[in-house]
Length: 384
Image 1 (tube, rainbow, N blue to C red):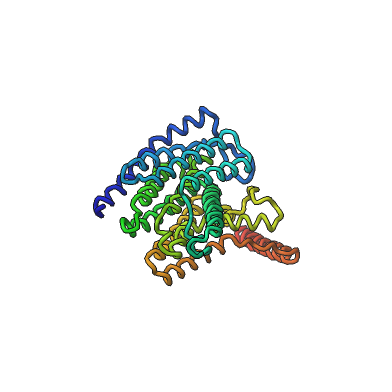
Image 2 (cartoon, helix red, strand yellow; image 1 turned 90 degrees about the vertical axis):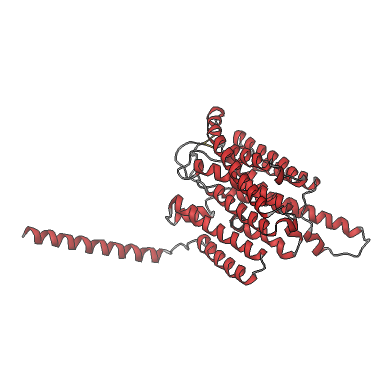
């Protein structure tokens, strides 16, 4: 495909996805009210203070799927990914309507990931590196396939839930996913026809376009939420499209590229799991320890907190692009810079001991007394 025609398809796909998502979003809001799919603030973990519809993921799914129907973006693997995307969206929508138990939702995600593996969407490069074997030895081939199955399912389910966990503030998951998808699409664009990346690029742009069309309705103050339907769909599509990408099979370094583009949700999820294990709690238990919660606690507010995370996601997207261009030193330095900021955000404040609390209280009391004395002195002077 010529480069000019390639760019034309990319632009068309993005705007088709965005336009369709923007048209469907108001319809999804009406459906949410009609079906009573409303997110009501029942606990202190929820940031919003008023009931908000949570069926907006329908607009993202319909918008991106409509754009992916363009022939230039279609091949058998993309079609398979779309089938799984519809199933994952339905699973999330069912959770929005009936509030499924975490174990049932996890089982559904695992089943969909297993189906994708059975239909040929697999991570195979790790097995080739780790289980190198002489030609004709079939016993080790079984072990290699088993490892490939485990890693593929773990990747799809893990990234799906990582993006879902990001959906905690207005515009956070949709905007972050758009940035991640565009970063990965640009990597696919760079390598273009040479590695068969055109369909993957166009599909990723379609996902980004769906997010772009939904964002005006989801950014603070949100008119609607994407719900689990939208969050699971986005996480799944990002995970599966990174698996389909031929780039990961080119070199071992190429395998790291999707991980770097998705570094922020991966980091947040891993840190959440370690935090809950340290507290002897279930890793499925929700809490207020995610990146966006830390930023809100620091007083940044919703919009600024979202923009800060957008910035870190964007930096990691650039890191993935630099790595694909074999600019290893630049990528390493930039990644270290981003992770430093992530650590600064999530490192919890140490509670002060009683003696320190008492000293601070006494100092504040003395300062207030001094301030009052000065004010009184001024008043007396004015009276005189």
